[in-house]
Length: 238
Ligand code: UDP
Image 1: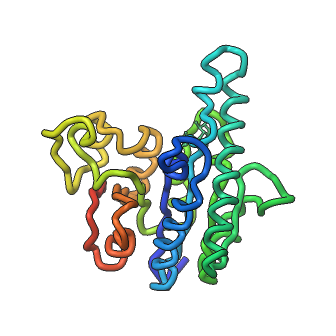
Image 2: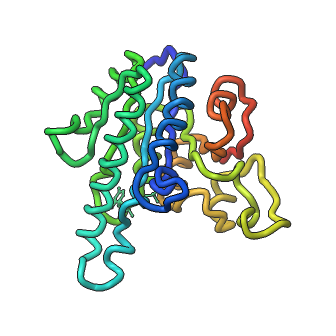
């Protein structure tokens, strides 16, 4: 599988979609993210996207009251990611990009089902591919789904787009003495409880030597700088 262009998988949390509302989808955030993704496409970077579902529902939270079983809650969470994927598709198409949503659960009226060969063809043709419904399995996270898809499509890196500039020794929003770590190993990320991603996702990245880049999605052009010029503000787990 010879790639002509750089190929990346960008993971956004569902919460990011909610903006200040804390719930649902903020169309201004969609517009902003779409603009940043367009910059990548314009620079011949092939882009896959995974969006979480935490702005709508998470399995763990839904099942906390004991009425909804965890498995059902997780499927509800996966459906939530498809809602976000369709919203992002609209925002990207609105500004002229060609986009396909592929879902790990079959929802044939609104999107394609996930077929990795087809996903790669879309990417090669310059289409953005949004992967919905996580891995299609309960008890996993969208971080793991994003890592899995990144490995499957042979991405050069997975980018976890967050609210902070990278990986810190402590939560930088709570602790002033938090120190940013520019580069760390997979084992550091697993060991130090640094919470880059869940352990399953990091372990999958580790065995496949997939670099994990953690960056601030709200810094304009940061994604482009990171991917194209190795110059953005971020931390790298490799
Ligand atoms: N989920 C799942 N399997 C997957 C991916 C996601 O069961 O492969 C469910 C799980 O309930 C999770 C929810 O979907 O809580 C939303 O995903 P996540 O919490 O990872 O979203 P984020 O925190 O990124 O918004």
